[in-house]
Length: 295
Image (tube, rainbow, N blue to C red; front, side, top):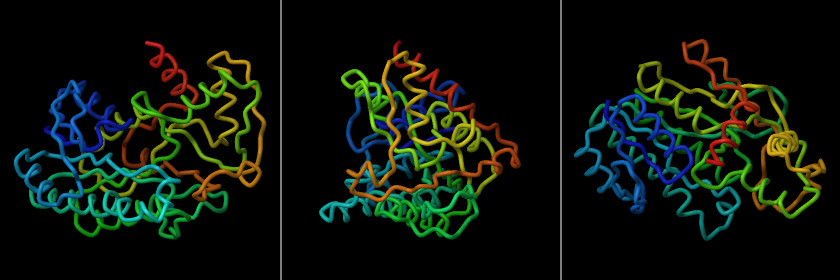
């Protein structure tokens, strides 16, 4: 299978490329700049519709895994960035979906729990439609979802949360760095969800494109729902760092420009129902991430 992966300079795109190679598939990375990657890749600005059509019609992939996105949640709230956020997350997604339709390829769109309003305690189901995003980023990702579902039939829309991977910045790396210079860190305890390790998610995404079980899915690691404070304590425990976690509310923490969801719980039961293997428990994923970061 030949697969085009966008956003290969990011955490997930990089790991999808590695998973494709492990399985013997042909992976072609696409990014807006030359990343000097070790794998085959093309320079592609997904907001350039003409270029998107040209590249995809030339490559003719069997599937496209769309990992590229504007993911700076706070930055998306800046009025000066509104146009580029929508250009990347909505227009870019539309361009890829339309090009995908012309060659009749499968399409994977990576979305987020931020498409929901973040209220309540019930885990969000893949087919829930009561969206109401609470920030610009969430709205842009929801609008991207709608473009995919409007244009295509052969699509997987996969919502994830609390992502961490080896290639790029993430919460774990930040907490470890902060812990090196602080005895105590303040972390919110009223935002609840589950982390997602990109290595594990990449395996699932390749599992998906090897099937025709299309539709909406939710995917995070297993192991139950936790707060960011719980996650931080486990990070320090597994790294052997003597740092105290001070649990605070979102209101007490302040700082963030964009509103954050309190309820990032995602119901992942549809994965098993459709024959997909769930991701491992998040503590195990964290352990493997820490080991890989040292190598």
